[in-house]
Amino acid sequence: MTQSNSQDKNSFLYPRSRYYGNFKPENLVFNANLQEFAQRISYITCLETGGKLSQEEAYEQIKALWKELKHSKKQLAIGENKEV
View (cartoon, rainbow, N blue to C red):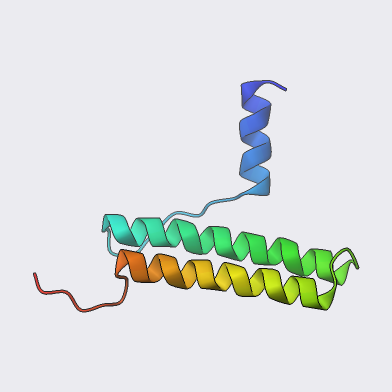
């Protein structure tokens, strides 16, 4: 597979939207994490709906992804009032 085809495949499988919020590096990173979370949740729900994952497996995977996202938010101090 050529480099261009690989990029096209990745753009199709892992689409990214622009960030329109207040530009701060931590907001940009969290937005990327949030988009990845949403994409992975979509795959998990499709696999569960298609019978490839049990409800329990899907739940556990989603729970783990949620914990990762919460940890990311905490590490980046998103939503906390900071003194400037």
